[in-house]
Length: 417
Image (cartoon, rainbow, N blue to C red; front, side, top):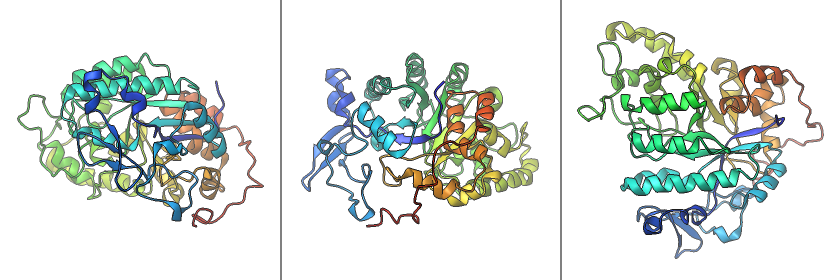
């Protein structure tokens, strides 16, 4: 087993979409993401005929803050984070990172604007085959998060079965619930069961559904039966009470609440979820207030759960963050096993190639066993790279990397421009 000191729990494969679109059937390639030369300079990526998203803040590795641009970058510039696997390993070494969980390019979220389910299915197949080939260059350092098509449960199941044979894929990434919507249904059950049986982590970059959609369930009357509570209240309405008025699209509150209120965690006690780039500073407040509101409202709603809401979260879910001092200081209120450091390389909230400094600013006063969990062991366990028992054993090993000669500037000082 490889020894890991640092694993980024969120990084991105910002390579040109042409690298994988060519694997699609020829008659569908024109409907896939396209590279467009912008009149204002640089490249953009167009999806479903919509205005192209310019290349800029997705590729900021090594730049000073005053060098950031929202457009004008090109794939031909060979910027950090946009190259081949050998380049990626060199970039990990520069940043003091042993491995990364590799998510799709930022354009992933735009795929939901494609209405043709056949195209979406073929995009997922082509991208995942490319991802597996990319990560297979060094599968102990490049952990793939495969894309599940946001279409329907049959397509989701077919792709889940396909990626189960990919040795470099460590997680199945959702951008909707498996049924293709932002709300869970009992039609999702085969997916949850299969993922649990495979031991494959289910993940999302930010979230995969339900945020800011109001208090009534939008799937009422549709073919699939919406997840229900055993009580006298609509699940979506009760879930909204437990959000503590916090939902924003990057925080997966309503997604997680659907999972435990709908009984998914009870029916599949071994299933694991990882939500990337959510931050963690909000978690102590939400976990505390959610339990409080559950106690206040469960009686009139006649809602029964086998565990406290926060217990479900702590037993099944991890979250990643970059530099989040509020969350790190309150780690005991979240759960030391539920939070994972990430570089978000090569995006603008990351600090490549100075992530050593970012981590040292946050973690220098942490006990070694806690720091090892945050920096590597929690995400390694969630991805099935190591077991929980191995994690606890490895956490007791002293940190061996040398930091005494590392100058730790104030946040943003080195890159402030």
